[in-house]
Image (cartoon, rainbow, N blue to C red; front, side):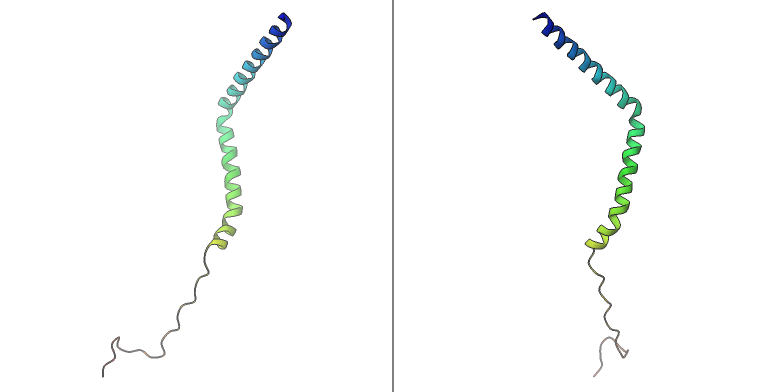
Length: 77
């Protein structure tokens, strides 16, 4: 029974050390991690966005034909 308790205690200690080490790594490298994620995100957005905008925007309608004659806005009798 003592061996089982020792194994559980050892695993608990290793888990705690792993969590502390991982947290320290993230704390020390957080700026580099954030910059890496920013660069990846901007790279993806730059490749996806132009096609997405072109796909979602409706086609631009052609302007109406211009009148053949000009004159007053209200025709006189």
